[in-house]
Amino acid sequence: MLVRNTLALIALCLLTACANPLKGTGNLGVVIERNIGSIQIVQTSQRESISTVTGLGDLSHASVVFSRDGRYAYVFGRDGGLSKVDLLTDRIDQQIIQAGNSIGGAISQDGRYVAAQNYTPGGVKIFDANTLKLVHDIPATNQRGENSKVVGLADAPGHKFVFSLFEGGEIWVVDITDIKNPKIDKYPAGKQPYDGLITPDGRYYLAGLFGEDGLAMLDLWHPEKGTQRILKNYGRGEQKLPVYKMPHLRGWAIAAGEAYFPAIGRHELLVADTRQWKETGRVSLAGQPVFAIARPDARQIWVTFAFPDNGTVQVVDTESKRVIKTLQPGKAILHLEFTPRGENVWLSSRDENKIIIYDTQTFDVLKTLPASAPSGIFFTHRAAKIGF
Image (spheres, one colour):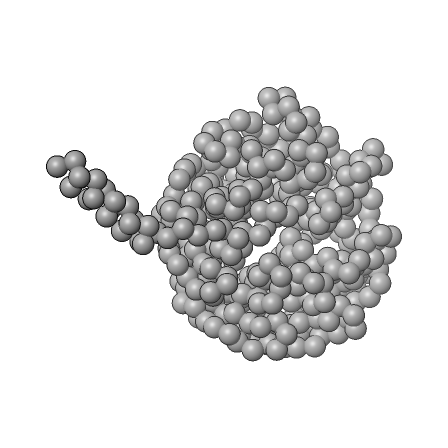
């Protein structure tokens, strides 16, 4: 009887291993299926979908960060949901509703804490990354004592989070070295910061301003200098076009010592030197840019657009600063993501329910994958990068 039970156990283990074979996490990623509250777990090397995880709530403006080892995806839903998804077992590990309206989050430098930025109520909540237990709640209260929407949340070196207050017009830096007593420093930013990014080296935090021209920049090496206004003369006195969708500075268009910013209400990318933060050029585009994302080798910038040009993608060469390719991948191209070394790029076509995978050298379509109203695409190599 003992031998029989042992053999049965071995057989069960073998069947389980076959059904769920061992795999690493370095070539995994997730695709948001916004209309049905699910994510697809994908493999970038084989260019295939391997599973679907459902029950994630309202993903109409979802974003994702990853644990240090790339095993867990933390999915931030628009309904305030925060879900910790195990990419190896294809299931939800932990799930909470932490706010009424949320638009994203970040993970701390050491991977111990996950922070969510919220619209309703405004503020930032910090959770234990293992258990999703709340460890600190930071209300975002502006100078008039009103709650402010939080945007542009990013992790920073030195166990810090940085974010902007839309109504409050400030940039806050939160040091969580002592998680029980975080230290908060506040800096004036300008009128209505709508998004923010931190440079790949973690030094500069920049906030785009919806209410006025220019950007606010905080040097995190020398925060005592306060914020500086850069590119403040860009567009001054010019009539902006109607804005159908806000550009996303988190597109990480920083390449070869220059930053490529999508310009609000304009058909241009603004180029600035990242040492002096002076304008060095402009790139004319087919429409209003939303995302401008640098290929990992910094040679190309891929740009997506707001309605009515959101079926177009343009590729900018960073050496000539010219558009070298215009593509029509599908209807409502919302997001894109490069594979870790940039040989492929994945694009989501919301209105055609598909993912399109391009070769970034030849611009050939390598494969299309079905997906239900896909939007954000996030690969696990983000786990090793600052500000992702």
